[in-house]
Image 1 (cartoon, helix red, strand yellow):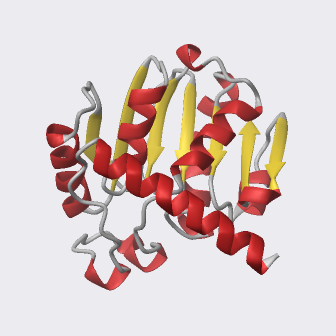
Image 2 (cartoon, one colour):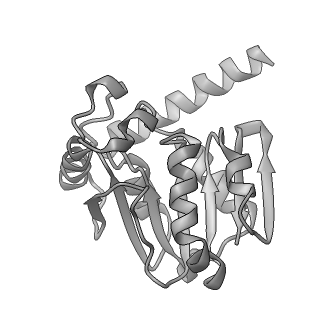
Amino acid sequence: MKMRLKIRRFFNGLWNQHYIASRHIRDATPVRVQSFNTRSHNKIHARAFEPVWLNDIDKLIATDRTKTSDYHFLDVGCGKGISTIYVKERYFFKSVTGFDFEPDFIEAAERNLKYSTVKGPIDFYIGDAGDWLLDDQRWFLFLYNPFSDHVLEQFLRNNIDVLRKTQSVLAYANAQELETVLDFPHEMVYRLPHIRSALILF
């Protein structure tokens, strides 16, 4: 099992490096929570930034054969926007948006988009998931384990009615707090244990 994980890390790392370099993305440097400059009270619930394994996004989207053109894509805790940029290039969502509570990350995301070979539009916003309210439209949410169950519960409590009403989807990579999500009403969950992820249909 450990050897399989090492092999997976190696090849996914190579793919990430290739994508980031070939698209001229300038900043993918990991950042520890201690270095965050946000003044949000939810900083104590944050997790360090590192780019998601981009191939996992493809696996999650393919799980339910999602027709992406039916959804608005929202990268919750988008960090430096690498996953957001990746999705914009590869899929045809109605819109593509990312937000993060760390202002330095949003500045980095906007720079990464500006200098990359990928063309927008992508909207990046500074925002705290614990306070974020979704518009009344069909969402494809993406999370790469950006925060603890405390903030995840806040986010879902504030938005579960919209998610259910619009039959939205949550793609959760490295789903450490999956049981918190499953405490909320949902229609179906696809578990992908080989990539420690899940797709939840509301």
